[in-house]
Length: 356
Image 1 (tube, rainbow, N blue to C red):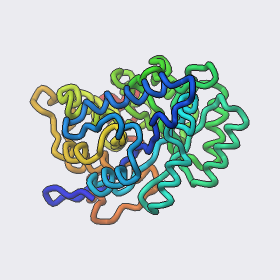
Image 2: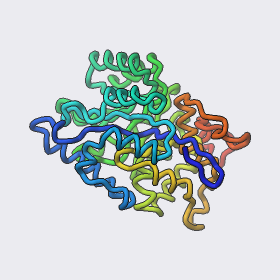
Image 3: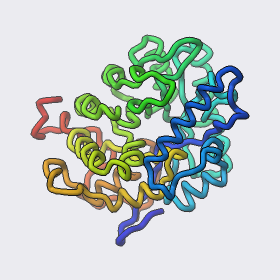
Image 4: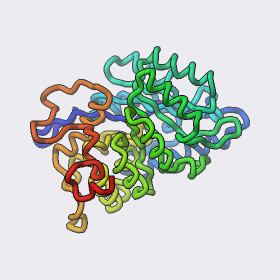
């Protein structure tokens, strides 16, 4: 739990991982991809403060003790949401699986929510696995990685008929939240598979699902914002935005946050540390202290304590039905966390409502 200047913040880390990318888990014949992937991840960690950098050996295979200390003991997080990424073409047991994540959650009740995933290229077997995962782990969220390789295919889109079949099944099973990786490219995956245009398509056709676009399409922030403002069920996942930009690119960070706050709105933005790329502690401390650096950003919405409380935890708590203690809730008049109608394009009476 985090408290600063008498204000209490309920923290939901809505995008974090527990992976094994060590050489013992590399698929024979695909070592160059397994090694290159984790080295690319490790390079992203260099965008955080130098004191937080890990040696590559620890980064490949951090321990349960590391995670519990960094996320909960030192990192202020109240509830963490696991987002799986399988990459089984390169990692024998998978890079970061539902099973591995959920097993840790079972050891620490109340600390974790284990999302699951699907890949529409897996056909009927994948549908069965999705159903089993939801039944076993109680998942109400998905993490989708549209650029993942699979038997010669180097990506898929949410517009695919096969993907719609899976989304329909997920909705039948009680899935509410669909987290989609869009934006930053990780070697050796292909940039075009990270484009946000397929989210626009699916969000229109599945209005009851919430689509949380992780990494907000960076660096193509305008593409995301103009899409998200017309889709009331599209949310901005700030993993990489805070961890990758707040320290290394503070002026660009201010621009990105300003664009998101203007177009998408503070009710539709969720914090994610992207652990183990970055630890949550410095991100939370820095964001609570953050404001625009100069008058150059005066045409963007102002940032209040309520803004930060929503982004750091209350919005995700609302999406996932997490109970928030009374002392962490907002006062009347400070807005409704995760309200779909907060974006400029769908708010009645807003200056840009005609865009919706």
